[in-house]
Length: 205
Image (tube, rainbow, N blue to C red):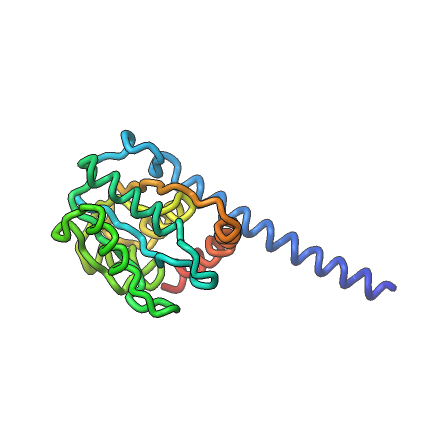
């Protein structure tokens, strides 16, 4: 019986420690994004380039329409038509797990909406968010840009951009709408783990 109680205490301690770590990492990222992440387009300042973070047009498992994809396109289009950006740098995986070229799919969809192809730049090496951020600065030479994705993603991307030792300044982000499907809820929950992993990435990148 004493051994069982001991195991219960150990498991409980580990569980509480993991939860505390996730909450602390989350709060650090949220606090860092304060005043830099916006949902109202009028609050966004002009930047020549918007960094649109890639995703696939369909959900990988269900193959249903991916509203993360659609809402990010909506946000990029809004910024462009409002004159808040002149160029859209689409950064994603050119050969994702299901063989989809994320940035090309996004480019084609934006062009179909009437965005000039000359206003779009492709980065197919944005395999992860951290790659997209580093490429924007080191490959494309961007010092200041507007990140475009959902709020949770924007907050993490901003933290990475500001803590990787990159030559960047005056970064901001524009929030795309948040999908409300069951799949989306899983994504939001998984973000807590992603934020813990992000700190490890910052140490080891």
